[in-house]
Length: 242
Image (cartoon, rainbow, N blue to C red; front, side, top):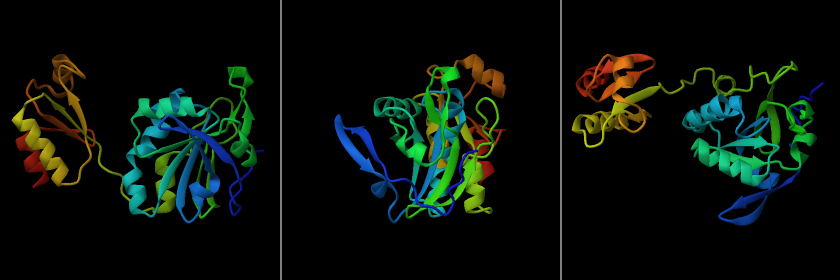
């Protein structure tokens, strides 16, 4: 049975991290004292669910978490600091602090160290998330003990709902652009003015013209999508947001 440690203090551990090509010890006191911190822990860097969903969504919602009193979002894994740093760079997750629990001391102290020898992983962390206030665990979301790697309750949206059930996640916005396109610049400027975060997909670099035509039916840029809906050109975006 995995331990729920709500109401208890986090384990006291010193983590061996590598920052700016120098070794730097980071303590749990430094991470948690006088702060509200979200921790989500996962089986391993670069693994599928961790890379495709778990970490990216926490990174996406970081601004909303900050508006709701969260000072820092920490991703924990039983990996060494070089692996964790490489993964963070690969994920481009600038809003997340990765902490290497290389020896599994923190994870063991949390009662979350599990045997994954069947995958060749050795001892790793069970997937969970928790809200920690001044070093004390207020809430834990522990994945159910099922075969494999369940991912049902430790996600960012569940955590946000717990912190503030009325909080609104940002609208998903993507736009297809081309370099030097003045209409694309106009669309991006308007989105920024209105406070929208967006993903820019550059035709000829990230995707082909065929991809643009396949998803939008158009060959001109920009083509804007919001919350799964095709908005259209820069002029269509102006009309939508006016």
